[in-house]
Length: 247
Image (cartoon, rainbow, N blue to C red; front, side, top):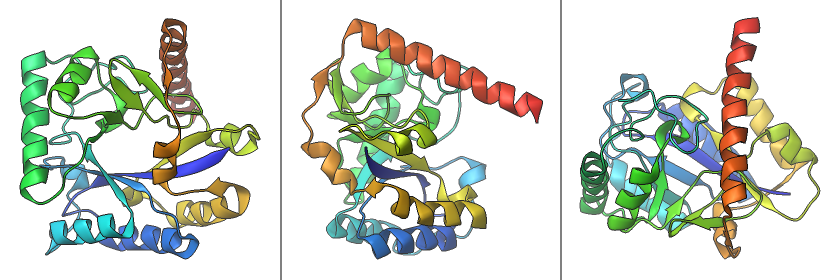
């Protein structure tokens, strides 16, 4: 099983020391990730330091290095308690809102990125939550790819290609089949232990650049697979809640 890397919560005011520490590990191994850029961050939890000068110029330099950029929501604010069609979390910036509301948020977010020289057709939903209206709004605004869903290869649904994340990192590392998944990281909240674990990942697995994912042909998602994915996401949500209660 090949592993690709995605990093969420990229903002001008993120923890840049941790970002650079994460990047140094990737650079050491020649791996280029997918990063999720929040167009208009209003989430105080992500507002960690003074905004970086030359932020968008730096992002464009990363693109030139081979990094891929996804639009990570709009404001990164959770406005509903909906899990949508991929209910890993029961909170969302998008799921549960009207099509017109979501269309405006996605359109405004893309405009901000485009105005600053970032053009992308990749979408990354905060907390992995989106619904059918999200997919319609994304297509309307020229998005063709989403970094989410479960599986070991890309699949196509509602005219959009999904690039799956791992259900379980442990199970993915043990999987010797021919496939590819994404491991999700949030550098802002990583500890020394998390960085050590990330470094060791490269000794345990075949970690490749995210662009390799784009070279795999997508399969048509069946209705049965949609149901299985929904149930798996729901089960994982409740399993995480149960672990927190036990602790």
